[in-house]
Length: 225
Image (cartoon, rainbow, N blue to C red; front, side, top):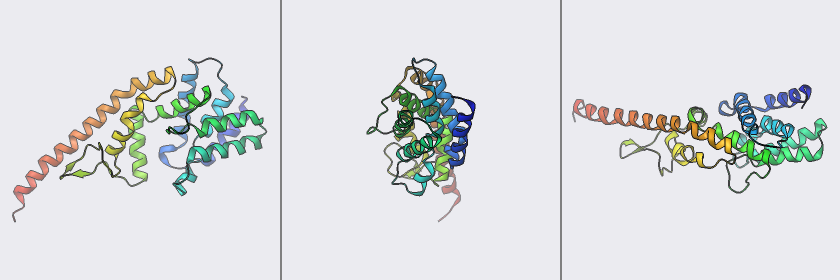
């Protein structure tokens, strides 16, 4: 890919990005993750991979406006149209669309091509470890979701919770994501990051429960009925 083509795709990505958890820096991290994974693979179509990485989240604004939409499907269509308009050949544009459409963490549209699998893993790596915790907290803030909910007056650990919170998201998604990678290098990087996420969750849960346990008893002694 020549520099002019890269910059044109990059400029389109920058014009489309919105929320803080899925900003341009997320896109660059996904691209860099993908390049690291691709270095361990053979016969990678780097033009397709770079294009797909840069454009993989351009449908996010549409999903935020209408939650019934899937940003991966919408983004794939948007990228396909944009790339054809740039003069990219139809086969490559369709390949990029397929990569983007299948990058979301869903079982009904698994990635098929090597480039799609690399994008899938590269994007999922940004939900692992410390960066995954940080991004989830930012995104939950955008959605006005709490850190935790209460169960019998104490912070719930999130396991089995119906109401959304950071702890619920950790138990539902973050702690389970490590077994779903499709490439060897993706799995290795994810495993390297697992402990930092586990330690943060355990530490935060312990702190808020300790605060509640002491504070409620102390307050009960001070407030006389």
